[in-house]
Length: 318
Image (cartoon, rainbow, N blue to C red; front, side, top):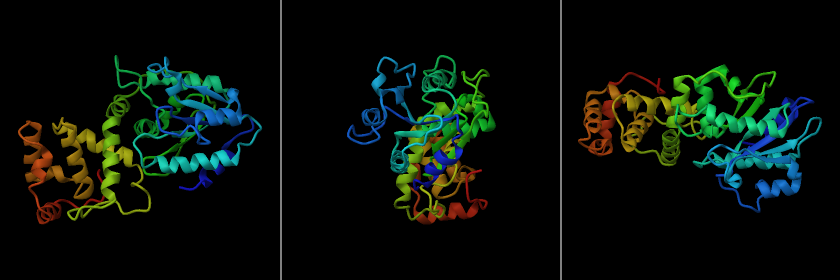
């Protein structure tokens, strides 16, 4: 990923009355000496250009809360150096579980209003009643929400009419909010699937990390694996969500069992659970008799290839 898409976003998407914001995660890593650290950006842009997003569960520790940084006010142009630095940092972020750059945001609303909305939505997007607030602004969580909600993501974005978000596959995704940029938390309850994406986000993050790691040196028994130019295939997070969700529906509760099945579906065949041998292994793991990884370890390369050959042709998980 180059800096070009971020520069184009800032130059061509920003309306005369828009503020351009950069959202960074206080829980992610960024050296204090780096130009994109919160202290550095305060020094470069002024205290008035930075506001902490006081997420409800961390409001007592503002230094670890996200920071919303105004890169350009209405009628102003952002510094190209900061835009380029943030784009390159986001590209490096793609290889890590915790991402510092959460995106570039456009809004006609002032810094304090947008920061307040981001914090309020942590409650509105929680995984369900009685569940803790959700850091929905994290790139993976936001990508999953968007996949579940479609155009309804606009009601979540509120005063943010456009959000350029780092994606799970190493590129950037453009999210469109309400063209009027209306402020205020989402009013209608989130659909169950949207809440499920937030509940499963940590496990999906683990699967994406294991997927990236495995692609560095694909195993010999992997007739099907991503060979494209991007880090992962487009919409990787949505694909990972469906795999994890369906593995749990098969009765797998142990996270290692879930990850083992999902990874084999990604590298051997997406329809593995339809094969009788694999069905037997899943049933044994679901009953707690053995670990699924241990059962799969008894198969040699030839066995996996024979299983894949008996299943319907498929390039991706349905």
